[in-house]
Amino acid sequence: IDGSLTVGFNTSGTMTTAGQASVTNENKQYVYPIVTINGPSSGTSRIYSIVNQTTGTGIWLNLTMSVGEVITLVFDPQSQSFTSTFQGDITSKILPGSNTAQFYLAPGDNVLSFFAASSTVTGVVSWQRRYNGVADLVSP
Image (cartoon, rainbow, N blue to C red; front, side, top):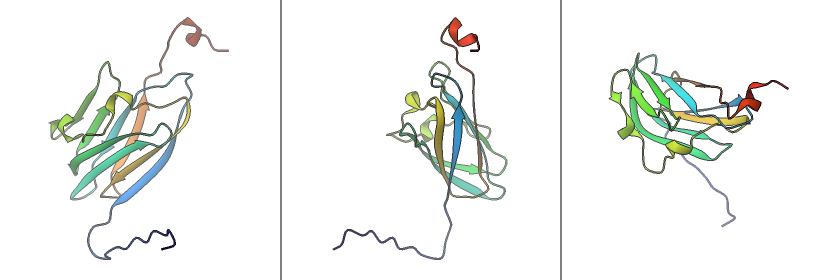
């Protein structure tokens, strides 16, 4: 055995898509994101995970979305909520091992990975600017 890993696959069935993007937090402190996921253009799609590769924190999901459905994941611990326009509160769809209280964007570039069962599912990351004192309000 030479230590190589060989991965095989079946060429029939459903394709699962992963996407990765860089998000820049220009604040001097970490910020808690709001992740909005828009459902697939047809049928349904399973949503598997959102991982911040920069901080090593991930959210693993057992969630299926439909056409027209919008998921909103608010990670701010003071106002955390995980909702769907079709399913209501989806907190129970977040799997053990996820760390919702520590899912934040570090200062600078953050690489986020998103794993879904459809290439037409889209995600948007936004956040509130965070101020820790008067010094943060004054531009250098």
